[in-house]
Amino acid sequence: MIRKENERRIFSEEVLYMNHKQRIQKAHKQAKKDFSMQKQDHHRQAFHIDPPSNWLNDPNGLVFFQNEYHVFFQYGPYSVSEGARHWGHYKSKDLVHWKALPPALAPGETYDRDGCFSGSAVVHNDQLYLIYTGHLDDASPKETQCVAISEDGVNFTKYAHNPVIKEKPRSEFSEDFRDPKVWKQDDIYHMIVGNNHDGSGQALLYQSSDLLNWEYQGVFAKSVGDQGFMWECPDFIQVDGDHYLILSPEGMDGVNHKSIYLQGEYDQDQKKFNQVSHHLIDYGTDFYAPQTFVDYKGRTIMFGWLNLWESSFPTSNAGFVGSLTIPRELHSRKGKLIQEPVEELKKLRQEKIEVELAGTVEQEIEQKLEVGEFDLTFHWSKGDEFVRLFLRTSKDRTEKTVVSLHVDSQRLSVDRENSGEGDTSGVSMPIDFSAKTCHLRIFMDRTSLEIFAEEGEKVFSTRIYPHEDSQAVHVEMGGSNPKLNLQAWKLRDVMGGIYS
Ligand code: FRU
Image (cartoon, rainbow, N blue to C red; front, side, top):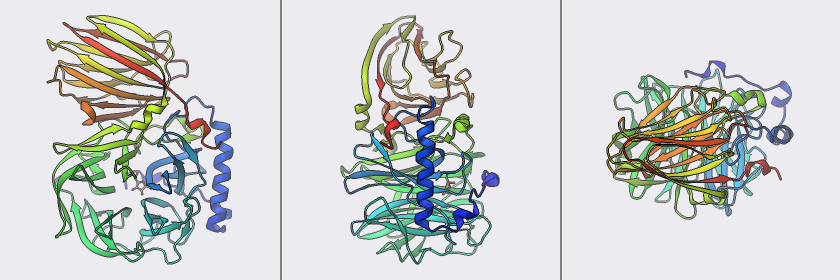
């Protein structure tokens, strides 16, 4: 793996000799203590999940259990630089207001000593099952699949006969064998696991009737052309009748990490997914390892990690690193995966601002908007029109993050050159301007922007780390005959109360 040179075991001897319950208690105590000191930091997200303290990466085990949503995540409670991964745990009744629970999994068994890596959750016989990868740094097998079970959705017991899949199915496959995603179909549990064979990523299929005894079924899907050497976090979904395979390939197109979805056909008899095309899930600079689940309303909902392994992490000095995206409801439209912010996020809305602009203008919209939502409709006619939205702008206007739409170049771009701390690279994505109007929804938290374009067909997620006083919003518009309708809402801070 490219990044894993700096993987460290942050385990003191003391922790290794504790049992699972004691390790959980220690991590929980640490989290509460750190959070109480860090919760006022101006880089703390207001409505996104970030860790109580220290490190967060992939979303894990997304599930609706006993009337509540549960989100778990890869969590390093003792260090801002990864450390042996635990599973952090938050729950919510509405996907908006979250409560922090004790971590669900702590590493330390012979089979997961160096990390309880990513995985998924299912409800079976009224119990909550977590299916995860036990990771060992310098061993063979390096990665095995394990189970932990809970009656109350809070306290988890690791299965006494772990691992439930003790080794990769073929000796010629690589030792990278992780991130089980489980779903039920025709009363049989199916699991896909990410793997690599001969330098190509692939997903392996298993089946079980009880989540404890698994049988290998074969290669479910594999790379066609350059789709990376390892497929992390595979997720197979059916949405609006269409099948998609979501992947986080390493090394695709010479890029260390990106997340894509494969559109294609599921051949149930052959137990294979045959891909037809692949597409980026998110065009931004910070998005990886998404996972989905189906809730009690039948919605397929996805969370992603709102970073990349390559991202810079300016908040490490403040003692916490990493966020999850907002929950996004998935749909299928003409072979494309559509992402929409879940409806419940409207509960965050407070004061509303609305402006209508036309022609060439430069205008301050608001002096203080740190955490907000924007709904913007841009009309154009000749094709030389543009609009620029300046977010998190300082009084002297030197600090700013600029979101622009250019009809001429058919692109949306985000300029982070003067955004504050952190990465400054700007990125753009293609936009279809054939309709004469362009509609954007933007969710802005203290250190992130998520932009939904083309009614959810294109999404752009990025991190910014501005000064806390940079809060003004401006608009600049120009060209032959542009018009803009902008609605914005200040959003409330719900994450400050996760332990209350
Ligand atoms: C993806 C990933 C997974 C692994 C986890 C470890 O970001 O590398 O493949 O299970 O992170 O934290």
